[in-house]
Image: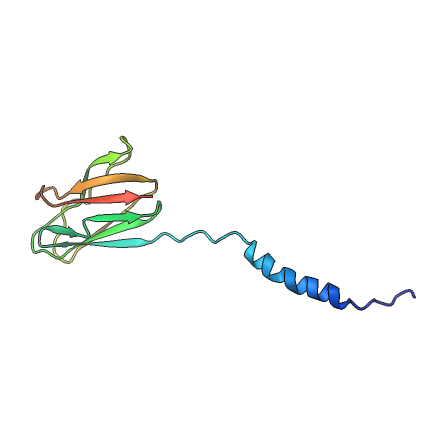
Length: 122
């Protein structure tokens, strides 16, 4: 019979229905969106003092003290990775730094060297 479409069998319908969830699971995962992580400057300390983030994420430091502070990287691992310096900023102000590549960054306040922190980028 020419021009007549054959009806799909139950087996074909069942096979197609079972394959659909597999197609959904086979899709590659969506890339994670960059995040901004918050670090407070409170009572001459960074809170949290140590933070782990993903490459591409940013850290925003917000000063809650009445005295200006900075977040100034003194060393990095790997050696030679770009260092950062937010410059001094006052109460209620924020500064943000984006970390494009993995590494460890030890930092301190320019005016208060006992005020230290670390950013670990995975």
